[in-house]
Amino acid sequence: MPDAIQSRDIEDQVDEFEVAVPSPPELMKRRAKSHRGFIIGGSVVIFFLLVAVFAPVLAPFDPYDQDLTRRLIPPVWDAAKGTWEHPFGTDALGRDYLTRLMYGAQISLMIGFFAAAVSAIVGSCIGMIGGYFGGRIDNFVMYLINVKLALPGLLVALSLVSVFGGSILALILILSFLFWDRYAVVTRSVTQQIRVNDYITAAQALGTSRTRIIISEVLPNVMNQIIVIASLEMAVAIIVEAALSFLGLGVQPPTPSWGLLLSEGRSYMFFMPYLINFPGLAIFFLVISINMMGDGIRDITAPEGRN
Amino acid sequence: MAKFLLHRLYIAILVAITVSVIAFGLLRLSGDLAAELAGEDASEEEIALTAKQYGLDRPLYIQYFDWAGGALTGDLGRSLFTNEPVVEMIFERIGVTVKLALYAIFVSLVVAIPLGVMASVRPNTLIDRFSLGIAVFGQAIPNFYFALLLILLFGVKLRWLPISGNDSFAHFILPAFTLGLGAMPQFMRLTRSGMLDVLDSDFIRTARAKGLNPRRVLFKHALRNAVLPIVSLMAVVLGFLLGGTVIIESIFALNGVGFLAFESIMRQDFPVVQSIVFILSLSYIVLTLLSDLINAQLDPRIRLG
Image (tube, rainbow over all chains, first blue to last red; front, side, top):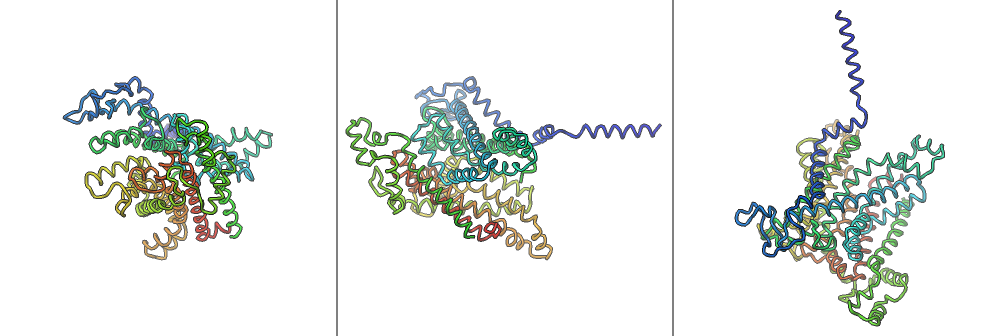
């Protein structure tokens, strides 16, 4: 009965077709799996994260242990003086460089992550409030953003660090102050666009409080953008922390921050270039992989928004 | 147009006043400036005397109005360390910083616009990937590390260029290149996306259909329309660079405003710091105001809308 077989085939195909329509989360997963930048960037970020978390276990030495008899030993590939005991060499005080770099990852990731998170919370609140309420409140929000943009951020940050000191908490808060404006600008304009949608009107008609509308109706719709900005700002925060520490106004010695390592290595860079290359490349690779991951998140969550 | 102008001006003035208050307050957050100025083991009388000498015993708002009133007449006070007038200190050095920022913008535009245009004409090809790669690199490399690499390569190994000081044009090449690399990705992305939008529009299709020279269509018709956002970004970046030269100036020993600010922050010379922060903010405000005006002039939709 060829006819019957044929019709069953078609039914099978129809079934398959229906099964094949993926749900949005499934679609996202597929896009994530096939996004090369996201996978490479994400893996490198995870690698740095693991190194940072397990530094106390993995690192061969104590990051603060000085040994002046073992000063400035070059990395292991230096045929004459390199040794496997210090694969990345030692610094001017005889501290193991690999160990200090590993602990440096802790500082960079911690400051970068929390600076991005705190500024995300502050900036998004400001932006959503301005975008949702409009009118005078929005004018005030715009005014705040304009003031922030006009201030020379790096100088303000340097002044604040000089006043409040370079503790990690102080650095996180000061850096958050530098980065909240982009969240505010983006969430504000997105909120303005979605404010007019029916589901917002419906929530208003039901008598939902304004705080609740912002949290449960607006926030989920701007969350994607917030995460994308946060990943990119985290990368910038890591660079700025390194810059502040490089200038001597960030993390204080002997804490191993990559920026500080760079500035300590600077006096020896003509003869011992590895002292600046290791921390410089560490910052570069961490930042580039965070950026790749962030771009990936943007493509995966909102592929229509890329260009 | 007049209404638009007035509104922008009103906001600009409001922002400028706020910024002056913030600049004034920055180093005063540390609490007892007089104690710090008097030195570590100063007695209480000495501290009181220092406070009186610098006028720090007066209420804060009087100190603010004193400084702001002076600022309006071009008097920003004197440095606590050199006792020079702050205005003179800044004007001696601002030339170096402005030069550096302008060269940096020039470097980034010269690279970014051609790359952006080429990338937009052939999206998703090798040239597009290549320019994207440069942008990604420029965004991820910390400029102080890049500066050190340039010093090692061009200053020490090849000995082509000077690595410190600001005596000649050659002294500005490495710093401008370092600073320009950081600004370039934004310009490139903006050129590319702007061009992609414009190239897709009807009037470009018409121009091509008329059989006009493709290069003419690209540069005369398309780029001209894509250039608008670049002009506003230029003002923003210039303002940003003026305040962002601290690191580069200190690495290349350029005696500019950024370096002065850094030194003054290190020694808590608050009259200098507050004045620099204020002047840089003011220049940013004026630059964005100008770019708004230029944009309104170029694009009637903005000034009438």
